[in-house]
Length: 392
Image 1 (tube, rainbow, N blue to C red):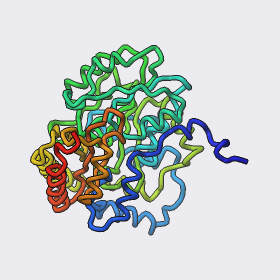
Image 2: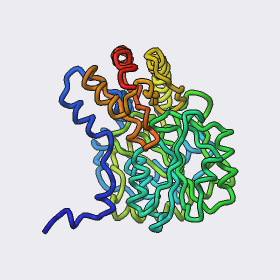
Image 3: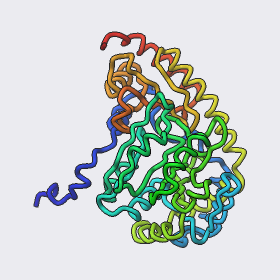
Image 4: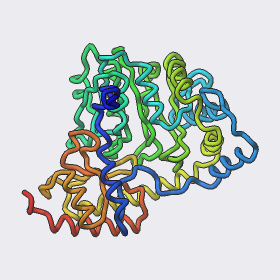
């Protein structure tokens, strides 16, 4: 038997992550600085860790309900209301998932009939397209532009919609660009979608990491509430990536059907992590505020560093990434990343890992220490000075 012939063509045709090979190279190097991994460099705050530990000490090691502990869902409902003005019934409209990524997968598998179109603004999180393909959808990419500060425009959205459009993904604050959508931007998108039978998946995992103004959810508009699924989680704002706790808030019909898949595939999110998440929502506001202030300081430092290196770099106002343009070096995104790693031992990610329109850009994260950022910026400037003009 040829096992390759047994594998689903859908899975075989999905390309592997464009980031993986650089991590493999990094692991072989000493003294390399990684600005690549999209996770906080902070340790989970102690009170959250202690809550997880205490839950184990008390023997809380059994399954929770499929939807998640009602105490956690109630805290999520409270948080969503006071933070974003969104009211959800914790018993019917909230599902606790294994990270926000599972919520994306569940939503698409619950909604998609093979051949339905899913609109995905890119550059964006690599899982959107993969999950859409696995669900049998046809991804329709909107290429976000630097001239628009990588925001989704109503004109681009309207142009992408067809009679086959089932879902639009709204990925802001954005990974990898750091772009946000202002209230005015969101209002333009609402005007396009409010009278259409299209479901919005609003990935708001970076909502707390907004550095100018307040994050605005498209679900806060009455005409969009029922047709919007809000996805969020604890990984980014609370430095809880390894705990794998996310959640989805939305129409009870959609949540109920997502829960069916969740029941068969997962059963429930880790119980001790759920107890830790309850503590995070109740008593970690000061820790989140501290981390946001520190990210903001690093953000300014990194943007300034890329600009001093002579690279165009739009100012990111959310998440913890910068997305500088490296076209002036004459190198492709892949060439820039590979040569930078080999010559200066600094790892950044090619923009093409987040969609073809990321060509000519790289992603660097400022979820790293100030010392690492300062040293990396020195090395990057040296690299750019050496290569500028050589490859044009």
